[in-house]
Image (cartoon, rainbow, N blue to C red; front, side):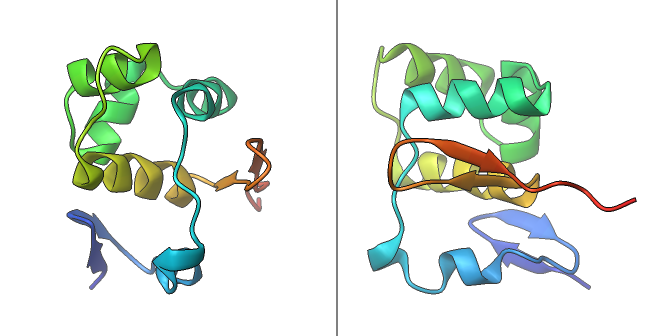
Amino acid sequence: MGENIYGIQCANLPIRKHFENMNEYHHITPRQCAAARILLGWSQADLADRSRTSTRAISDFETGKREPRRATIDAIEAALIYAGIQILESGGLDIEQQEG
């Protein structure tokens, strides 16, 4: 059985370390969000599905139309991190290479 982190059910979640100290965690910016999707080859709809948010919430966040609720940002970040994205304090991104 998996864990439920920020409303996302995940099996054998390897990202717990990323959420242990949220005070040291740097939230994703709209540009990082769009870049992370591109790195993963995801559409806004793909990210919305994986983060259990709406496509409109993703679009509005990435374009700066409106600031989503913290729970929405947390869900987006969790989905991206679970997919291997590392959100860097410098404002950049890194992606973990998948084994196999």
